[in-house]
Image (cartoon, rainbow, N blue to C red; front, side, top):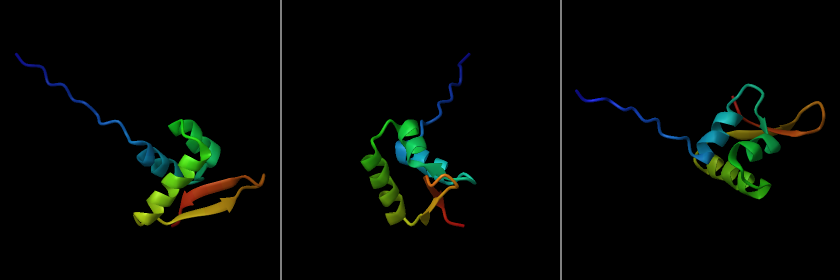
Length: 73
């Protein structure tokens, strides 16, 4: 008898960022830093990389003046 083991591939950090910015309310820089363990400049560089790959990522401010990133509809 053989056991079937299924392994799920862990999401890469850029995939994690993309998942966060695809949420309805988007994601703050702090949220992306926390999710990836990256510093702010690394998160911004990843956002630039996603834009270069064709993702339309927009920036806006929430009611408290915090910048929120999200994929444009």
